[in-house]
Image (cartoon, rainbow, N blue to C red; front, side, top):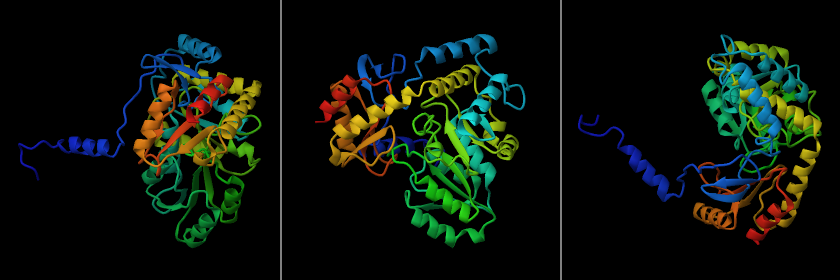
Amino acid sequence: MHSSLSNPYGWLQKSLGTIHRANWYRQVKTINSLPGAIIELEGRKLINFASNDYLGLAGDRRLIAAATKAIQEYGTGSTGSRLLSGHRELHRNLEIAIADWKQTEAALVFSSGYLANLGTISALVGQKDLILADQYNHSSLKNGAKLSSAKVIEYLHCNMADLHHKIVTYPSQYRRCLIVTDSVFSMDGDICPLPELLSIAKAFDCMTLVDEAHATGVLGDTGAGCVEYFHCSNYPLIQMGTLSKALGSLGGYVAGSNDLIDFLRNRAATWIYTTGLSPGDTAAAIAAIEVIRNEPEKIRQLWDNINYLKQELPSENLLPSESSIICLGLDSPETALNQSEKLQEAGIFAPAIRPPTVPTSRIRLSVMATHEKEHLEQLVKAFC
């Protein structure tokens, strides 16, 4: 025990010093404009390749109008949990829209995607159960698994042979088994081999949760995600996603069977014990789904932009990607930071992603449907 004169928080400064020396230090950057392909960042106008607003809807006037109308009608907040005073007809309308889009029986909206994963995983499995998880899963999936108290075993990234080996070795020791994976991996842009994964899950009677956060609005004929892209909507799986990326709003959702959603309403602590999604965010998400389903040309334009950049950027540094996330690998955090600064000098905002977020440093580019040809050409020129 330290003496009464010691500072119990003194270790924080030492820890921050270690973070600085490793070039892992992070701080916020202030954007003073509407979201979009061009933003004003700390007084400068830059081409934005750092946003998850893949379809450019966060600044769409229709979403703004829908949110404004909902705020005027229902106020700025939901005022309580959905089971007490926080439920509005808007929430039900959004859940119906999501279920219809995802081709599931029902859906449940959470106040964030992170909360959706924490609450769902910890409700479905416990100490007697097993989770098999891709090693590159998002933090929310990893922490949901920890919170559940289930036994967690990671399989090699997108390696179905390793998943099969582990599923043969372990599940008989446990009550239930849940396979958990991102569909599009947020720091790499590659996608999971979903049909093969679901085939393994079916053979061994495992539940499957797929995080569609970075696939929704990007993949599939209607933008419903990786499940639609691989024509797997008829499988009995759990689809999770977010409203805060291609849908330009805030919040998360889980879509699946009626029994699943009814169970989560009664057992998912991060839904039961938190305030319902605000009326403005809810209405904006409803409007976004309507726009995406009625204007498929937005997704086509996004993919035109993605394919152009994949063809024109230096191929030797490109990491494998099948989504709107394109990464260029670099050899150190310092190199990544320097490259990001050079891009900013060239009028481009593209973040350096470094350990511990990822195992190797990189520049992460998020492509948007609203990027114009000259935006893409300027980016390519800055790299060449």
